[in-house]
Image (cartoon, rainbow, N blue to C red; front, side, top):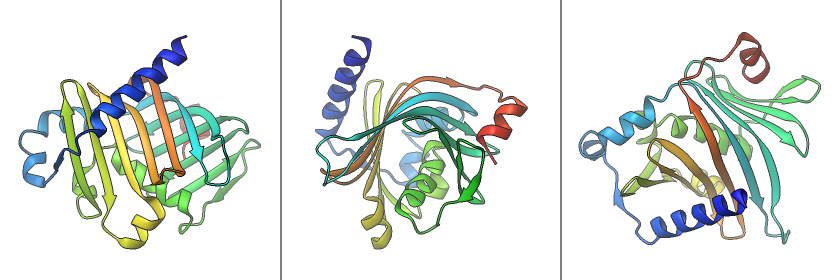
Amino acid sequence: MRVAALWASLVLLCAGLRADVGVALTPDLANGEWRPLLAALAAKGALQASFTELRFFPFRRDPTVLKGTLRISPERGLSLQYVGPEASVLVADSSGILLRDSAGRSSPMPADSRQAGAIASLLPIMRFDLPSLFPRFDIRALRTGDNWRFEFSPRDPAAASALGTITVVGTGEDVRHLEFKRSERQRIEIEVEGTRSGITFTQAELRDYFR
């Protein structure tokens, strides 16, 4: 029931916020009325959360479901630890995208791959690094009470074709839903829960989940 209730609340949250496309976020607005929220989101520091990732494809009726742990280190980048159906770790940092398999073998992900582009975009978005984002994306924002939504549309036509629109939905200071949408039938949705912020990763965690 807890999972069903969570999904129901997320569906209602996202549907309600989608009813209004919000405002075009500019540097002036980001430094004005939106500054308290953006500053709070950007100041969360290192964080860890559980996630469920749904990958929708035109040739499949049901989505592929992946689960794991998301970690962000301001110094080391973004890490997605997948625990099922096959264990692996994906790391995005200033050096690029790295994929580590269950045996600990590492290999770089091709920079021009669609997944690499999506993950590379996710790092500055999860950091709410607006100076890095404004040159690359048209950004729209909406806030209703404690609920908020940001839509990032790549300015570059090739990136827009590869990535589609990237949406981040949250409540308070927590991200709850991420979406990479190329079309209704081809998209990735990530539900985030159990976020812990301001944590300190151990040396073992830094070694195992980052570069």
